[in-house]
Image (cartoon, helix red, strand yellow):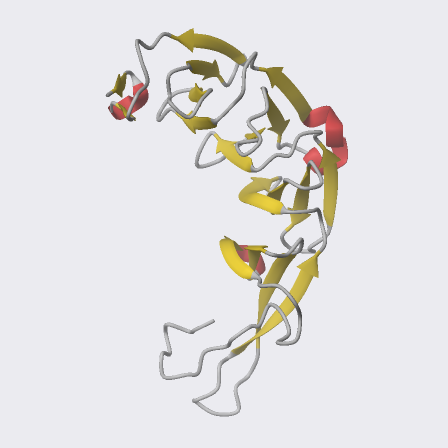
Length: 231
């Protein structure tokens, strides 16, 4: 951690493991909760989510930092694979997809308290929709390519729990999902060759197949998401 307003001050280095501990922990994804002064880290080699909270202090001299870093580890699930940030009733929450324990975790950014919701798939991707103020999380298993997509309504999710979770059967594996810019739709890829595609209506939660004459090397959306150009 480095205070860019005072680059002459020393950085604060946080070690995620002890030198004599087996295995390697590698930071992979960091999300911020500015109002809480906290950053949440997902790392490979660890089942924990690391919460780093910056706490103000009075420095003894101009060379010292005016903050200290408090570290908290949240053992919320097994093999956390993706994280997202949303706001519910003015409070920032962290959503974690846990591949190993086949569940999702909702963490309160201010208190670090959390709840787990069982999904039943090794979920590893989270898409928050719509942006910039998401109300729904689209959750799926990219690595395992399960034939399902899960929808989580974010409003009051900690109290309502599984009542906010719904599942759409896709009648085929899901390799990837990409939100279509400016529209209430997402493109669903069903195979690595991009030869089987669907358009998913995020409001109605339905799928419409897209016919392709062969595998696609790639694709782009036109501005506004009105057209999909494959090549």
